[in-house]
Amino acid sequence: MERAGAAGIDSPQIWSLSDGRAGNARQADALADALGGAVRTLSLAPRAPWRWFAPRALPAAGHAFGAGFADALAAPPALAIGCGRQAALATRLLRARGAAAVQILDPRIDPTHWDLVVAPEHDGLAGDNVVTLLGSLNPVDDAWLQRARDAFAAFADLPSPRIALLVGGPTAQAPYDGAGFDALCARIEAMRTQAGGSVLATTSRRTPPGIVDALRRHFARTPGLAWCGPDDGPNPYPGLLAWADRIVCTPDSVNMVSEACATRAPVHVFNLERARARPRRFLDALLARGRIGGMDDEPAAITPLRETARVAEAVRVKLGVFRD
Image (tube, rainbow, N blue to C red; front, side, top):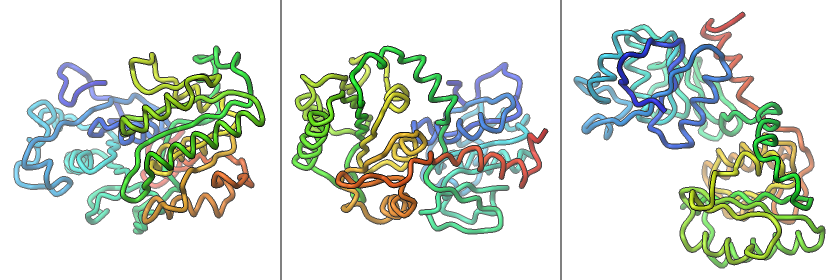
């Protein structure tokens, strides 16, 4: 990944900007790639005081991301795509220099500071320049899944049905505890014992150590794998999505559930009855469409949730960019 302000690089057509957090970078990159054209990815490291108030443009905001980015403003791209609050300041600055600016996620100030704002339905944001979507942007489609199957071809040797377990981390809006997670693992092992097959489990950076330990303990002798960090080798997450016959997710990550629902596998969400506020609105929308179920429910519809191509076309039409 190129750091903001790297010198000696000609300006491509599209810049993808984020604070480097995986969920934000993934959304900006997914939209940029779907639009086509040369893409420059920038991971922003904003300075105080601007990072405290972004995306509000305080005086001298052009220096918020260092001298390199300030110099880069002299040669803006045709299109700047940002995701997250810090990137929203950068896209505002680039728009002022002539770039078309698309901001992903609710910037929490007037969306007219950008040409387009792409926001999930559960944010409740509306406006003439707002494009809404169900869930989050991601690269998962049939071609992406086939590449993942090829990259993790060894998973074909695992017994099926393969249950993928995607574990994030509890939050105030989607809580669960160690006892609840133990119950989830016991339920998954019971499902596997009844049907045969294997379990492919993965954690995230937000997974508490106690949950990681529980996952390893529960599935130590279960056919499959438990990936809990770089010490376990390359992250197999794409392979889990591509080879899963069934997916179980914790309820805390809109990005994770969206990517699970972009596959053609049934998706079950653990503890969804305790989710509230924004995550609950998102999960309720998926429930209403039959795309997910709880642990005791079979999803009624397996139509993949794929919003990225639709949003990319809306950007092309509304901004008149990157059209054939």
